[in-house]
Image (tube, rainbow, N blue to C red):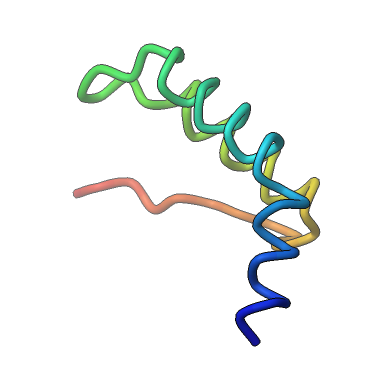
Amino acid sequence: MTDKLSALTNRYCAEMLAFCQRLVQTPSLSGEEGDVAALIRIEMERQSLIGEWRMKSEE
């Protein structure tokens, strides 16, 4: 299991690091997180993790 995890970590390390850098570089002040949410949505769709994603508005 450890070898498998290490292989996956090595395989995706640069890709995930680049994604994290984009997240950190994207302004996301309170109430203005739309751009970061869009980045996450695009990445999740690219990874086939979701088919549809909607956030509920706070009431």
